[in-house]
Image (cartoon, rainbow, N blue to C red; front, side, top):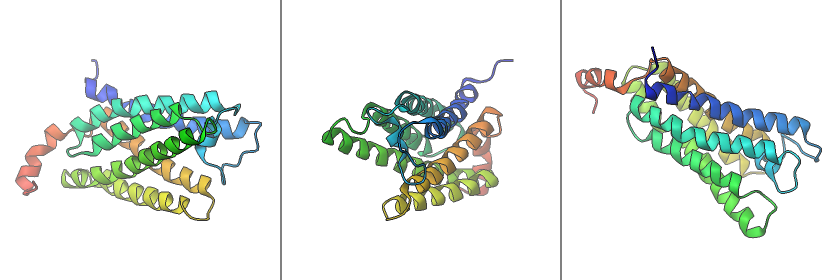
Length: 207
């Protein structure tokens, strides 16, 4: 029996984050440049002239393409605007891939705007999904959504301070990516479906 299209699309929510994390882990471990995963941002691995640029750019593009596909399944499985945040994060990541660091001052500025936009969208994604999940009885995933959003938001705020920005960037992004993978797995397995929980929502008095 073939899986429903929305369930099949959910697999992108596992593939994208896995490719992104894998790219920066392998890139940081194999690059010949003076690079620190604690101090340096992930985007530095895709900078102009970096030997890790092809790998990290591929990670960005895979994530950027995968997120809107995952969003199509999230839209059917979880009510509310969380899916929009998933689309925005994917498109912003494609923009990051298209504006590598060290090309010019203007490109670096645009890169920063796109990177922050994508990060903010990732922070919003689980937080926007949390209430619909809790209301529909998916309490474990809903609580994890709240935790992931708060950890990611705190990490994003810390990157603006005089702290190891690379470390906190990775903590924030990885936390949200793990939640995306968990939600995608639940959708692919048929455990999340807004069409099935709506009657319970009505009975429970939730709008």
